[in-house]
Amino acid sequence: MATQNNLQSYELMAIFTPVLSDEDYKNAQKKFTDFIKEAGGEIVHQDAWGLRSLAYPIQKKTTGLYYVLEYQAPAETNAKLEIMMNRDETIIRHMVTRLDKFSIAYNLRKRSKHLTADNA
Image (tube, rainbow, N blue to C red):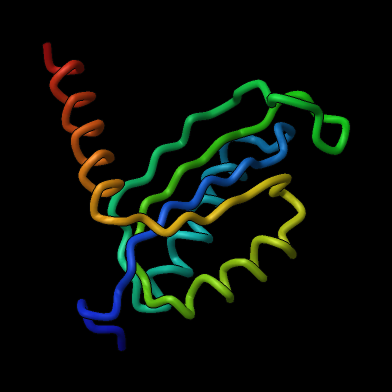
């Protein structure tokens, strides 16, 4: 089991094909969060942006379902996650970014600012 010391912070941005139903979109998100938890990681924050326009066509599609996941996990988890995402036909693009302490602080400020704006 992973200890808190060897967990690294990451952010996953995945773009799913726009033809997914709401239920399939949620199941796809759950598949990745469950995988990270089973690998000894923990989910910090997740945000389903929903349907957005793409900057350029990908696989003849001009829109995609965006999903952002901030998590902490052992470094070896990302290699397995990468294989899993490459094999998943519902994902048209994905990117995993390692977060440093400044990125983590920025994301935290951005989330807290968003929460206070919603409560106002």
